[in-house]
Amino acid sequence: MSVTIYHALDLAGFRGALMDGRPWVLGWRESTHLYHYTEEQPYALPPQAYRPPTAPGRRSTGNHRSRNAVVGDRERGPYLLARHLDLSDDVGYRFSNRSWSGYPLYADTYADWIAHTWGDFLLLGWDYETFGEHHRLDSGIFEFMRALPAELARRGVQTRTPSELINRFQQRSYHLPLPVYPTTWAGSGGMEFFLGNSAQQTIFQLMGQVYGMARLTENPELLDLAIWLAQSDNLHLIQWFGRSGPEAEVSAYFTPREWWELGPDGVIREQQQVYLNAIRAMEPYLPTTVARQERLRARLARASSVRSTRTRSADAPAQEQGSALLEAGYVLQKA
Image (cartoon, rainbow, N blue to C red):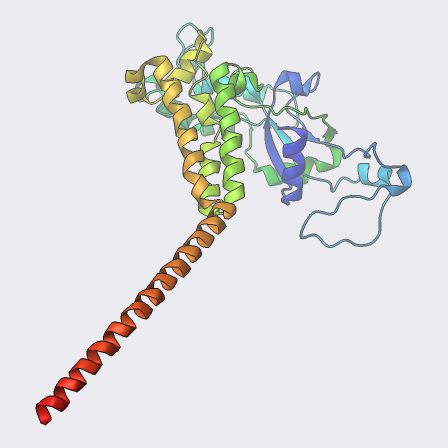
């Protein structure tokens, strides 16, 4: 989550959003409360010029409220629900770690931890890879999940949807300052996991070049391709480059196995080549290139038409002479 992402979600009409409860974002706050990001007055405008922004598709009521009225309005959005980092990672990453002090983790123990956590609610979030990939079948992860609902029910812990939590706690949501740089679930939660080495930085720059080229073509299929190439996974899978340690091991795990035959440098080289090839392949679809080709084809067509006309003109006297000879022969033969 970041300031830009928050406003993009707001403009898209979202009422709530999930975010990672990183300490460097929450600060002294707990992840067990509902938050919102207050829309502050733009510093570049004088107070009398401020008007609450109207999202695309929303009708303006014409009743422009003051800045204080906007900030004090609890019907703002989207509200923010923060993932509980420690309890989520206990299952997401540490469940099958034999060196972890909490190993082995049983459903009743985990339910106790949840029940005794202070706050309004508790949000748990796991990757799909948690079940069967990070933790294999023989780790007991599926038996753990099957037993967990009953253990939670015994302790009076209820489950709710995000919308239900927003309806219940929106009147006492708290302001949360958001960072300019977004938070992530990977590594320490900052952008250094995705942009921390030279290979990632190069791919990130190429992502922008491919996307910019696709926008220039105005071709929706090429734009869709550029968006696929801009996925964060394409940066995640080369986090290991020039690094070592647990995070690098996790990153290497996401790199396709057959790629390793190329060697580390070969993997980086071939990945960059994909983006370079995409840029070259999009050049013929640029409107200026297409227009230039159409003009060239038109000139060639006109030139071909002129040559054809000249050929017919040159052949005309011969055809007339042949017709005259045939006519003379016919007259002589008749005589």
